Amino acid sequence: MKSALVLFAHGSRDRDWARPFQQLAAALAQKLDGPIELAFLEFMEPTLEQAIAALAGKGVKAVRVVPVFLGQGGHLKEDLPRLAASAAGKFPQLKIELAPAIGEQASVIEAIAAAIARGA
Image 1: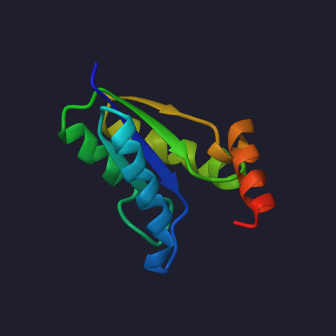
Image 2: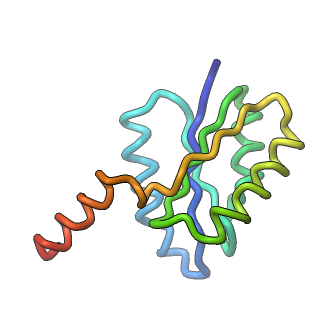
Image 3: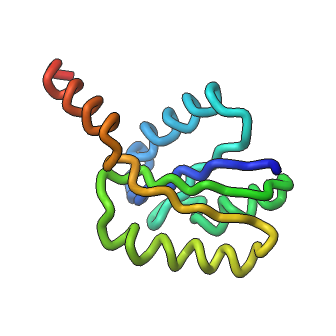
């Protein structure tokens, strides 16, 4: 089964805001075999549905959506499941899995703390 990854971020009116997410996607492309897409909740494109549609067009059968958020707030508890369900309805051939917010993982918290402690 061909699988892919979608990095799901909030979005911003400022195009420069997306730069770290683009860098993250590029770094992941060096580590993973499958396709990687960025998707945004608001203000930027592609949307989650657009990213999933692009992956479906590439023959992907499974998509893991990783929210690049620090915590599980309303956007991830309400908006993301609603958007994923809508996409699943339009692309029933895809298995769509929602991961928890990346910022809640212990290793991410430790990496952020280490960077702050170093003065980075």
